[in-house]
Image (cartoon, rainbow, N blue to C red; front, side, top):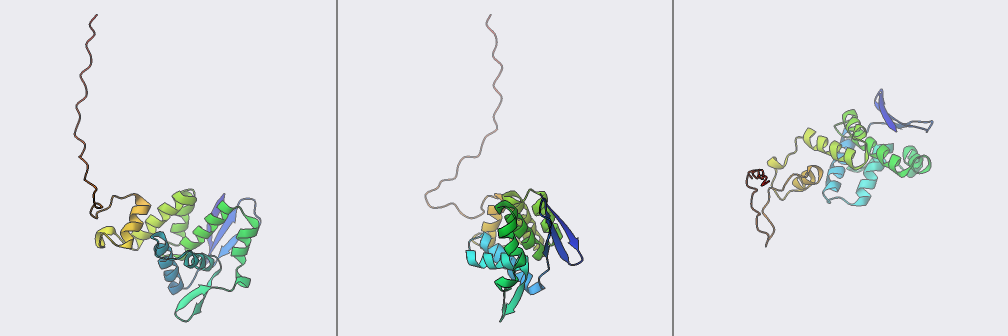
Length: 188
């Protein structure tokens, strides 16, 4: 079980059975914005796995500015990332990394709480991503049907598409109200 608490400006993630907590320091706003953008683009297939790995490394251990982009701190300074590989299970590592990522977005502790209270994993990520999209004021009604955002919203909420049907697909009939069958009369 993983619990989260804020300590000053930091997020403290404690894993049951592990003595030392994971301390996540907040990124500067522009780095958090870049991380959020990478996360949302990854969800709709517009960012590479390497970009997402860099975003997670920054969420866990911080970033440094390299020109106009933020990059993860050098590997020698990635204390939390190293600990994930050495001290916890793969599922726990995912939950810590995603909680750290949500901490670095505009949702901060709300995103962490949504993710962890929903059980982490796919369910927690789905709910936290939905909250992030809503918090940022993004909506498929404000964008074109072919946008990446609509794809993200559909993936996260199973919302039917507003775009046209693929070629060769015919719309189905809408269900009609059915009347219950009359009870059978006994013939005895």
